[in-house]
Length: 622
Image 1 (cartoon, rainbow, N blue to C red):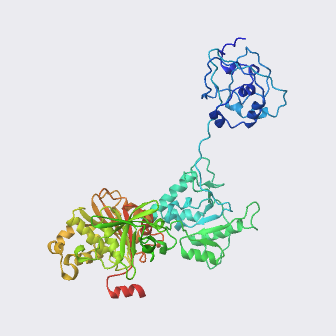
Image 2: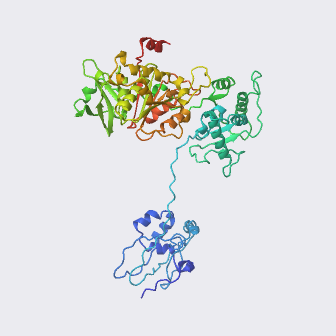
Image 3: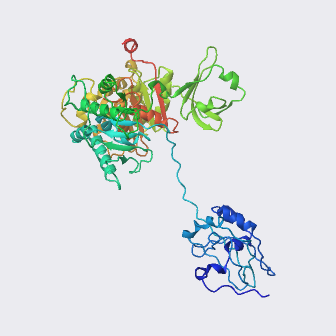
């Protein structure tokens, strides 16, 4: 019997009785790609495999079956027709169509009772069988994996005003927990928004964040504002404002008009509201006050309220965990690794390739040292880490007089480590931490003058520092920017006087030739207040007293560096004078922790003072 001609009309206008989707699908052996993609209707697949199908006689030269992509109005309706349909005549054109709206109803085909399916003849053109038509399901868009949140009960954090003014992004750092802002907090934010101080900027930034949350589409202040509506996906809680008066009672010894006491009253009212004996319909939850004010937290605990400090701004919980930049090798290092160590020499440096359990603990530009009685010492820097091996490079000894820098020689191990970083042109960012008298400023100036006046590596030295007074401020200072910075740069004058004369009066070659005017002409003193927007090209920048900088101020200064610029940050974390800054939240700690392991940065903590025996003893006992 001859085969019928191919259909000339679109499949969408053919009646449903003209074809049998289940039988026709089973008459074709699906390709491996079709089986992988069409996985949404397991029931229809099961029925299709059970239905006996009579296939048309193959043509003399059959073409291999292959999948072909079609749109939703052209693809076969293998998933939409019932499992059983009247037997189609050989002349009936078989063509399937599937629509997105009908694909969901295909699973009901299995539940309908039906007699044994009749065989269906599949139409195909005479020259070759028609290519297989497969319904493809569009893959679902990939969803970015999110950090799993805690499954425990969420807390309600009441924020004090000082937290918002300390970190404007604190609203989005409480993960799945909710935040409550008393009305007096908004009033205090409004009172601190004027001015150009850091506190005023943070207050304005917080107000803008609150306005963006309240103005988001579908925002309802009464039901709480979703904190992730402005793009901060890490915040899964809600923000609640005080929209109605709260009933609370405080001791008569606390003045009712003070802002701190009003916040404590709000916390007390919320604690009663969300307690197990509180208002019906409210699920019990913990209410916690978050404040940077120590006295505020003490008063809250005295009233029986939960209070915590804002910890998210701290880079490290403990200052003792700060990266020191140096690591001692174990006493049995050469005994265990001596046979496997490779060594070679390039120029003035010797290199060692080591392996073993110590390698995972090493970082690029970290210093290692080996000191043991009766054995030669080793002082080296990690220059390469590849897999389970690391390469150590020996150091230049700046403790020897022939390697002195402007008459300055290093007096201990850590100073030699620091001088190697300061004199390395491949290290763009150096951080030095240490107590008073460890030689931070002297070494940085000596290395800077050598590379500016002798090596001509940099054009000039730029020195700045945080202008935070130890005691009472002396008021406005007259003169230009550099003259106003003069009183803050006493350390610079003291060290320049020492460098110009040489160590102990024995002036070196440059110390004899260079005058104070020449040195001063290559040193510029700048204020931090005018750093934004500047770009330093081929400059040697010294940031003194960096422990008094916030992480934001540190970022502002470091990002000023242009091509060929080296930045040296120095500070003593035990002498922080900025309010609300601690060893864990200081900008110096922030920079040390973020830059450790970068191939073009280095850090050293100077441990021993070399100023004088009086200064060393005072640092220990006072």
